[in-house]
Image (cartoon, rainbow, N blue to C red; front, side, top):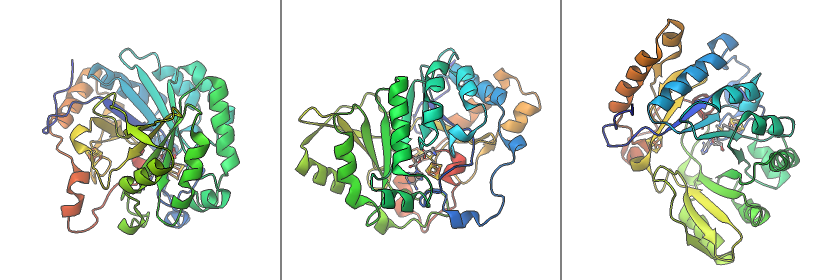
Length: 336
Ligand code: SAM
Ligand code: SF4
Ligand code: SF4
């Protein structure tokens, strides 16, 4: 059984599940410290999907044609028993790619267990190799060395080709991007430069802080000539380039200047079990309480097919035509 295409003809192919909304960093573009303001903004434990509920949903999505599942957050590695959860998800029939997005701080103590549990890929977020810039962007928490240690642990555990996600902001970390790229050339890892997005409501998004990918591409190409690489799948978020000298690849995620909604095949589920069909949705559909009320896998599959068949999201393509910034769910809740 495969889910029907949405109203714009897009199939359901990928699922991202946020396993926890808490984080050990406070990145200014995602979860700025002052926005939390000492209030209990995080979900209490009983609101989180349990391991069994996450497995139930993953199995249902796999029966509907989803092959790729990414676990995200918040910081997934803070979730108690996360490695065991991975072990429950990796054998699900149909899931061929089980990926994690992490800030890497806790990878040294988890990487081997994650490999053993069947995780197939890791994306590490790292915005600069300059410790001051890094800490300013991470809200004064973590350090470059901790992330590098996390990357080294992933390599040792056998995760050979990491993706390194870097959010670029003008006059914040753009002057450190060439160093970062230089560091990861010839390592087998792929840096992906992400345009600062207007997700959530608290990250003080300002178009003047966005560095268009075209500008970065030109600077990088001037230093290390690049040529485009054909995407492996239409739904790939990054535009890929390879270094002509054979030093590896680089990617650009250009949600602001070159939106890719036409190829967007991703569904998202928050840590408390709300389904969203777009990163920028203001409203989602509650699934957790339906599971707790005893909904069967067949009924859940029908529910999800119904939601997907009505999907018409293309926020990034419409952004410039919308009158003002729209309300969105925070990135750390929705899962990046
Ligand atoms: N904590 C994990 C991490 O940072 O890798 C996983 C969750 S984080 C929300 C997922 C991704 O979203 C990260 O790569 C982060 O850089 C990205 N992200 C968060 N806020 C963003 C924003 N405003 N614009 C662009 N990317 C953003
Ligand atoms: Fe935490 Fe990731 Fe958000 Fe940074 S981007 S605050 S590491 S969830
Ligand atoms: Fe997909 Fe929404 Fe992003 Fe467009 S704006 S690519 S529909 S998540």
